[in-house]
Length: 402
View 1 (tube, rainbow, N blue to C red):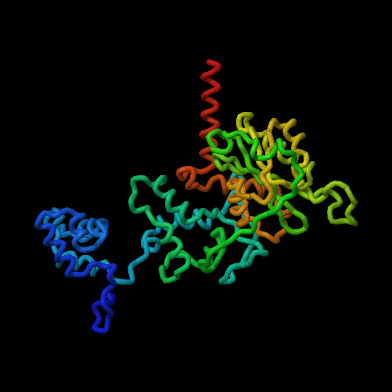
View 2 (view 1 turned 90 degrees about the vertical axis):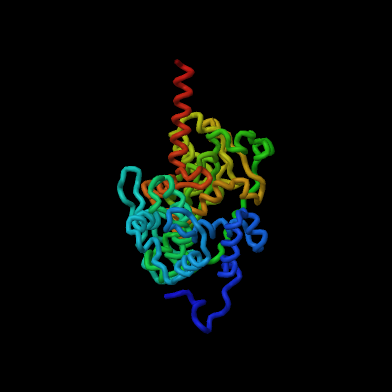
């Protein structure tokens, strides 16, 4: 299709586009030796607009970058033709890369694929209180930015995150199917703003363990080994514990299965928390998980003021992990953990029974999150960042003993 402004009934060209008269003026000013900023000042345009025009629409047949108004207008009219083939539709290798990281299956650390819940596509968002499809689920921005690291010399393997979104939401683009929107974190079939609920805690801690007493090295994320933790809750008092390392954003999940007797008979007053996320259960789960790490990665843990951390003193004695608590109603003081919990809701939606997931499921989801590139890490993955920290610590130990 030719540009619509060629038709007799077309409206005047928008002022955001350069006109042929302006291109003639650019050609004259360039022939007189004026610079880009001088041309922009005389035409009332941004210097970047003039620079882009000279670069994109120059005449190159003679081997140089000569600028002629008629040639530049021809280039502009050709570029304005619609529709254009979508990049993802034309490049099968690029499309496979995007689709695999958006909708690929997740796997346990041993390599076994975890299918997750079976969810039928209904052409709309499933809703908050229903199961979600499990997938690799990199965000379009992560996919677009990681391409530059994985294919540094292949310019054909480039696509913007907006092009991925358009391919998902605008089906005329002809590349990715709309049902893959279920693999996005929001799962929305339409692009809408999102909001998050903020949790509340109970105040039971003493002033000496408040976040104001936490070392400054934890606040500036300069030293690894400082963690943030919380619980995500589901139906029937089910829960999963989350631990996030502040420097590398490495995530570990705590398996908190219900205890024997849960759901059978009346609840005993002042009895143990049979749901599996009482103070004793959380203390034991953190101890089992955090002690798998080197001692230099067990410096502190920041939690909200929930009763599940009532045994924090015993936790400190058993693991050497100093525990600090946020101020009431201040989830932003655990920003990394709050963000991670939002990502986890893609796999564990609100209103579902989290007790249905075993330890292997949690390990697979944790590996999926730790294998996603992060913008704050320069598009490295948390697993890569943590590996660098451990290697650096090992070199320091060898150098000291040597």
